[in-house]
Image (cartoon, rainbow, N blue to C red; front, side, top):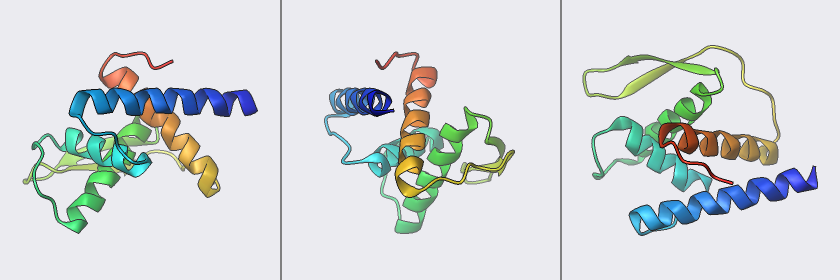
Length: 120
């Protein structure tokens, strides 16, 4: 298990470095990456968001990355262009550490699938 965790951290750090090279700023943590994914998925460009909108963006990101594993599917896009998701299957019950690892794996998968890059 230790090797898998090291491999995940190596891939995660490589992803963070790639994001840094792309946008000129390295996200501080998983939440920063999720925020960027949310902005990308919203598709309205980088603008100023309210605190509530930032939370919504992170929700969009989580739903999107978990949709790749079959947990969510896009339900509809509202009049303001915000996507809404529906849960397809129950999420696994994980402690906080394992939940973060699970999300990191799904985020890496998102970048590999959506941007056709390989992160080893």
